Amino acid sequence: MQSNNKKKICIVVSSLGRGGAQKASATLSKMLHNLGYNVHIVSVLNKVEYDYKGTLFNLGALKDKNDTFLGRLDRLRKFRKYLKEHQFDCVIDNRARVSAYRAFLVSKFVYRTIPVVYAIHNYKTGNVFSKYNWLSKWLYKNENMVAVSKEARDKFKHKFNLNKITTIYNAFDDENVNFKDDSITPEALGLEQYIIFFGRLKDEHKNLRLLLEAYKQSKLPQLNYKLLILGDGENAEE
Image (cartoon, rainbow, N blue to C red; front, side, top):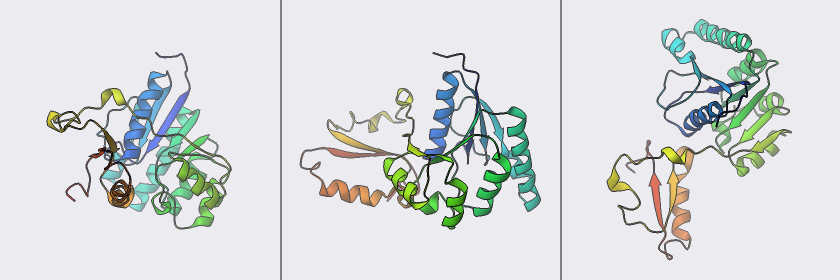
């Protein structure tokens, strides 16, 4: 049921395709829209595969036309102008911040006085922050940060002395989860007791080898609990 909430929220994403953070951002846009928020999405890359709700500002389309140094500066300028014109109540930044100069420019030049919530979607430092720890401490020490796991929250809270970090798990739209092939549903596979991994099949990010080893060493196989792995990605064949 929609409310009469007219607050304007801007969700900033690397893209709206192929990735857990991207999928979570698309789902978040639908949740906030259904709650009555005025939702806008700014996508850095021109990849739109997931369903979303709200107004899309596709910076990626501009990137495809001109990805020179001047083109990047122009996109930053247009991004800043877009935020200023719409006067958002809050920005939710779901991107990784591994590029030091981009992290600095966006935080200090683009966002400036706008309230921002920075989301952390990965436990591995190098997949979230730049290699300059002192810069991350300076940029984010007093910013609102949200990690998608308690472990990531605790790690980065201590690593960067973050004063305003909490945990909010990724949203999950269980009503719209469908198997493309009925022959691979848990029922069709004869699975009565099972646990599920659901995500991108890329070991570098998801540590699937650790998952398999942990399952092997646990009591679950003895109790006839199967491990069902759902997803696609670079390590799917392996």
